[in-house]
Image (tube, rainbow, N blue to C red; front, side, top):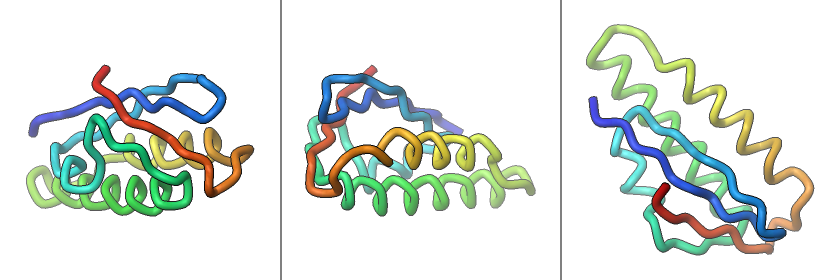
Length: 91
């Protein structure tokens, strides 16, 4: 299953890496996107859940790393205003 990683550019200039076990995430998030944190949060979590289900369908078990990525996202964005922007770029 093709994996993909993005670089997230947070509002204060910090950079974080986001991993997905499936390119299905490209249906939700793409390099070049700039989104409100609130929109990014819902899209990223939905995309990671779908990616995990793709892994389950192919291998018979969910991808636990997507849960770790979700926890990281929630931690990273917790101190920002939901209206602030986060941008996505290639790693």
